[in-house]
Length: 173
Image: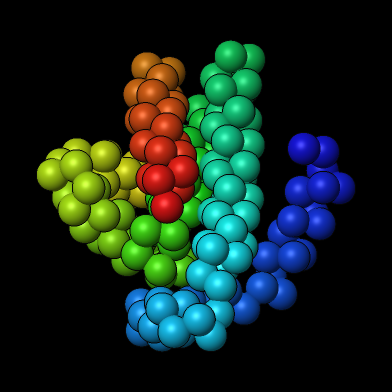
């Protein structure tokens, strides 16, 4: 996907009212579907499109983090991009699986934890994401924080695991 296509997707997402979906609205849609008033498969397809566009953002951030690590440029930015890869991936999975569009970082980690526990009985990835959320804040705002190259490798590795897990959750919707 080129930069123009990404911009078009982002603009489309900003105008999409399905982004405002909540569990109670989802329940209403399910009820209306059961009474042949709406076609839930079309709504699910639109929701999947939104989630997949967020996964593209996640993969883009991950690719930038990997490239930065490879070239040895900015370890702080590697942490930043790795975390945002996790953020966008988790946001996509929470959106389709829980019918919630969560933008606040700490709230997203909490919802992601609940989603992981519900589906896998394990919250490890949410704990890792929360660790990187805290580290991203330090990297962005604490000029004295040092980031070793091996830490960047761990951040990227965790981001890959989270993106892959979220892809399977989105595909399972």
